[in-house]
Image (cartoon, rainbow, N blue to C red):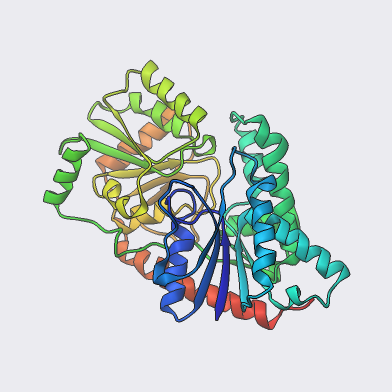
Length: 398
């Protein structure tokens, strides 16, 4: 089967969603599929990863935050039209709102030109979050929200979400909550809606011996007596990293917080201010952007992974922690399976976060690594996606 994948976040760099479509593509290539990519790119990133020498068609990323709908997405649309003139695929698999103008194009064709050649190919749309739900959660939590998000980004994301549901032959959600929200808020067709949770590459995310662990800790300025709490990923307001930082003063002094990942500059400044005001410079270690292949080190030196989000789809960071035997304390989503070692926060109040962290580090729960590996390998996820492709092709009606 020949697949066209449209995804804004494709490595390099490895931040955002990039590892998800990359790992899925690797598994699809192993299964014998042919895959071609349309993606955004950073000019100084070093070029796109091309596993198996696949073709990656790139479009320069948005020059300013919140402008993707009027910059990169427009460029993608015209590049796609040119590409389609001489290229055929069996399925189009689009992730998120990068393809907003392709959705609109197909909607117009469905409505007024149903005989169009463009419509001979079914499209599968992949939702990693639900814009309306995320917006409601942030408003409910009275989070600091930028004007460009309120007035441009969110309305356009919601428009894209609704439009994609009108043109998709099948829709993939990363969690049951996402699927339920889309059915409730957007009137998504339940018969065309499927849940495929994120996967994990167990070949790189795994536990290590004590000697290697101590060596890695030393390189990060940590010692064998430190109790290390990890947060890995993009640092954004909705992830409540500031609340996690505010929980540190409630913990014993040997408890250290390891923050790995890039973030919004204003939000990073907010975190820095909290660290300074609480004199936490010696207890909060900030690493910044770390390429995906190097990310396992952060999990291997940690005692606990903590993500106190207001809203999540299904974060890959949590699966990476569990695969490495690291207990995870989270909020903002629920996994469909009961996995030993995955604990949920009842509140994101800093004092409560600290209490739960201390409780889990003093009495570490058993992490069922084998269950994680057997249920959440990328090859298994690829097989689930194949079934959805078959559904989309067999049930594709104009």
